[in-house]
Amino acid sequence: MNDESVSDAGGDFIRDIVTADLASGKHKSVVTRFPPEPNGYLHLGHAKSICLNFGIAEEFGGHCSLRFDDTNPTKEEQEYIDAIERDVRWLGYDWGSHLHFASDYFEQLYVWAQHLIRAGKAYIDDQTQEEIRLTRGTLTEPGQNSPFRERSVDENLDLFTRMRAGEYPNGARVLRAKIDMTSGNINLRDPVLYRILHAHHPRTGDKWCIYPSYDFAHGQSDAIEHVTHSICTLEFADHRPLYDWCIENLPVPSRPRQYEFARLNVTHTLLSKRVLTELVRGGHVSGWDDPRMPTLAGLQRRGVPAEALREFVKRIGVAKSNSTVDIGMFDFVVRETLNKTAPRRMAVLRPLKVVIENYPEGQIEQLDAVNHPEMPSLGTRQIPFGRELYIEHDDFMENPPKKFFRLAPGREVRLRYGYFITCRDVIKSAAGDVVELRCTYDPETRGGNAPDGRKVKGTIHWVSAAHGVPAEVRIYNLLFTAPQPDATNFAEQVNPASLEVVNAIVEPALTGADEAGAMQFERQGYFCRDRDSTPGKLVFNRTVGLRDTWAKVASEG
Ligand code: ATP
Ligand code: MG
Image (cartoon, rainbow, N blue to C red; front, side):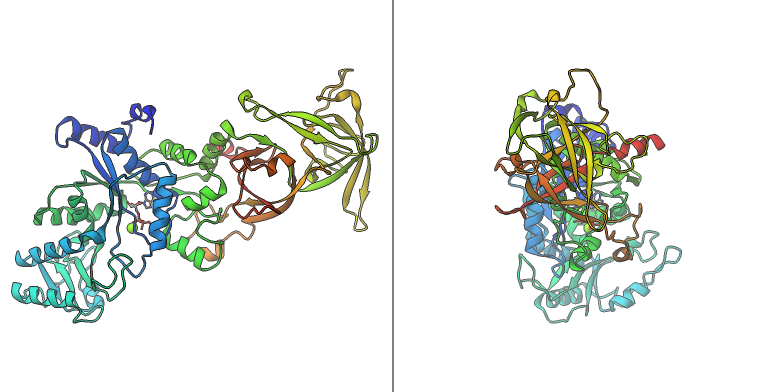
């Protein structure tokens, strides 16, 4: 992505392998691929795989393809293909001309299946799926040969042709590799290579009614694309002998090698397309891009910059054994990234009215506010100040404990960029709720300092009541409060308080057309404008709060 990433090359076992293969001349250049199945949107776990595959290609001057593993038409949709392309681009990667689909290779794969049949290495099995399962054996017992295992090559070829021609219903027959029913690796006990599926495919339409299995399509697709390093997650390690068997027994144009790394797991988060699909279908969230979802679309909508995702992936590294990353670490990186450039603004999320009794009615002053404390180049802006303001309800307490330094009856605080005010009176509703504060200000304290040198401990943010703009603010909390949610009954564990909607008052600058990016609402967190905003109604999403929970987690060790 930039020159820095070149010097970052190395540092994980896959990059070490690539470095060695290029140094030894085994490969002249590196080719990787990211191979999603288009049966859902991409999530945080996929980001790890994308950054790894595209990152390696970039660092070593090779290329990475985007290959859709579209071999299961009953679950795959064009919507997902489009979303995956969008999300990979958003993350900052480009496959150039290397956009591929396993379905582009269906004809070639079919020819290679015939090749195996002719070599006596594949056969048509008429057993049902259940019978095949029952005769597969277990981890401790060998499987049993199928009664159809010794069919002649001619009969196998004929049946395979008729399977393709659509003569049989779903499940009537399969093509299996003829390897070893006693193998210690269950994946080598005559795995299924083709199954009958009368289903419309998003790209090949009704052309096919037999589809290759993942194991038969994947390695051969890699070989067709001259992939050098086929990088996948650990659960495929047991499939590698089958991957290699296919490559060895077929006249493929190249010999890719498979390497496995640990998948990303994150606390309070379920990274599985099955679960995410059910969250969407079950109406637990508003859609794939609901900002509570760990999908790339959801994170983007919540305001997480792609840069933060890439940085997060870089920090967690690539390892060979599975582990779980604390969600606090993700928030930490997001916060750190946003802090660098997000302009500061003032917004009152839970407004409490303040009337400054000694401030002249109708008078307005413009106060100078800095846009970013560490970036003078972002300049300053003027914010209107008047007799009536809103402050945060939480910044007032009628009976404050000792360590509360904000507003309370008789107490003085500093208004950010403004004056000192003192609370003189508390007005309550009939129900006893505090609804308004009557205060006075000290005109000598403009700019936040008292000429007599007296100090105040608290500084609070505020918005002028006459100028403030109402806005809906959506605050996102954990979708699962359990650190390790259970993927089987996740629906019961969805946090009912995962979305809080508050009616805020924001400073008028936030209505500006160029205020759509990330910003910090002072003392609150990082926010971005949601696309649900209309000219008449602003909607903001909280990307992440300001509080650094990761520091706490880290120190607790
Ligand atoms: P899921 O388990 O969420 O359903 P999947 O593995 O079925 O995901 P694919 O579309 O097959 O999804 O994944 C594309 C690539 O992304 C694969 O190479 C897979 O190994 C990788 N990948 C998926 N989940 C993770 C994860 N949590 N961490 C790292 N890589 C992942
Ligand atoms: Mg998969």
